[in-house]
Length: 48
Image (cartoon, rainbow, N blue to C red; front, side, top):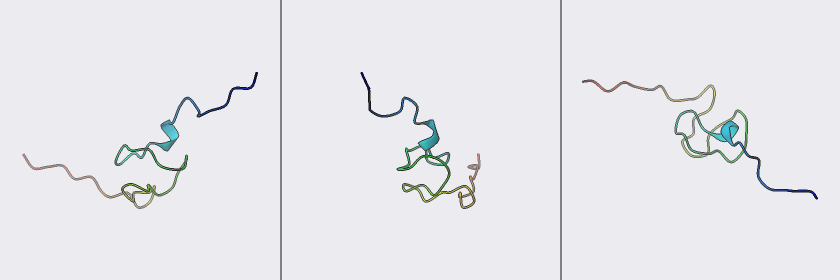
């Protein structure tokens, strides 16, 4: 019997900047925050 459905691991869809799932797997711009491999916003460290 063929079993269909979603893949068990969606790790390749997780945006490294916002942590949300992107629409498509692999590298590219995040639909949620706009970050991409080359356009990711710089992370800033809050002053203590």
